[in-house]
Length: 357
Image 1 (spheres, helix red, strand yellow):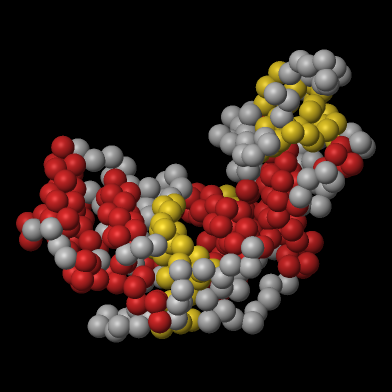
Image 2: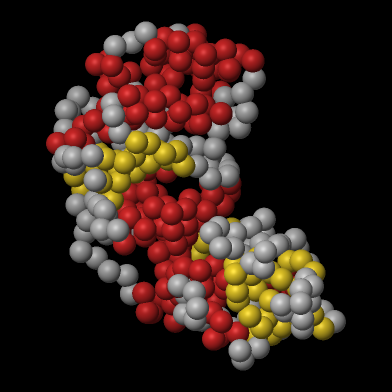
């Protein structure tokens, strides 16, 4: 089996749209919700697609066509992941394409992340870390561990997303496929034998990466030595570039998955016994716990709300009688919690453990 990760655009909708609908489709391409006209349009497309013979699918959808074109390079059973934009048309197009792939006898999953739209650079950049993390932790790492090949099909969809994922595939040592118009077989771009200077990046840039990952405000003028390929001056503030986001997704578990990191805030302390409790969890979960602590540091220093994925709650339990608060470290599986005490405006983290039920 091979996991084939494909980008999914809206070519199916455009190809089945009437001439006078195509300009309208472009105008609503980045709308998050559909109105009555949009739902009616999708219903008609779905009805017309149901009337088409299966051998017409490749002509109607660039995404399905490119998926089928990889058959020569990826024989055997394939599991498909379709990445689509966080828009009404993106979701509906991916749903319809997934039905076409399922009808061909292969399994499909859909993936998007909040704000993954291409009409706004800021929202697009904000979505890339979440997309990278979802791909890495939920698909690429577990499939590699199971010795299941992973490849990218980067033919359909939006150019900005295709360019990012091409670099993502390269840095993760994965092949990708492109289908030229009129071709019947996809061209393989093999995994390149390149390696990042991971040790150098972690030692030199780790604090910048950690702070920007949890939205710490960083003044660009105070970080003139920051590599501009990784960090950009955006309105006087330092932000991760697309390359910086990509490389951080690649380094994050290695950088944060080896015990508790030094707090980013003076208002957060780490008890000596915390390290031993980290060692009971794998590197990916340790990285999640460190990210939660970094988010808490940001909250304590700036007063801004915690990230949506992180919750801090008052806590009382006879199993942890000295603890006053718990911080959500991760919520999947046996959910992880950091045990803390509060003294004035300072917190001390004592233990990482699974959730008390």
